[in-house]
Image (tube, rainbow, N blue to C red; front, side, top):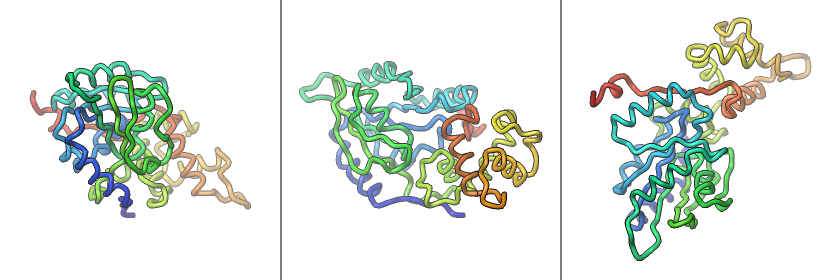
Length: 277
């Protein structure tokens, strides 16, 4: 399976951002704490020539120990980072302070650009900063199709569509993005991504896998683990055969909603952690 997804509105949005950069005072780049590196688009970074804040969303769904490792890495990279839990608003006050730090007195209202890949929480973040529901929110990627300016207590926010890389050359990155629903479900095999996720959990979080699904042996053959979960959750066709698609979607949903536990799918490379030391 080769995962690729780059709909036409993304290319259009990238051109629009390039045209608007002269009007922008601060950039908020949004990434997902569960996939902090994979959820960043290096192509978009080339557009930035403005002060930038890295807003790390979904920290409540990520492994807190691994988040601390990422914070160490970002500190070495001299990145301005704010950790966020958008459902309860944690970190929004800190983000406001960071935004204002970069704003200077000027005749027009300051303008802040919010960018990131699909489904990392850009619109929810904008609604939190604006103090009202003004940006359309959805659990699937691709909800925001075009740019929109939104007033937010002392500055204007520009919401933009999620922008993926035109080509996902690293398929391990693509699998991580599929697992966190940053890629449209129709372009990948849900069962294959679920098998990939289960193997990762067997290696890195076996205790969470065992606890969530009451597994006697979380390290068992992957087909067996998948089947046990399907039977336990009643994902069955007539005749008792496992409904494989239903089982796969159930496991992915459990992961995405944090029901398996706090999980982070990647860490910085060791040589990155040693930089600057």
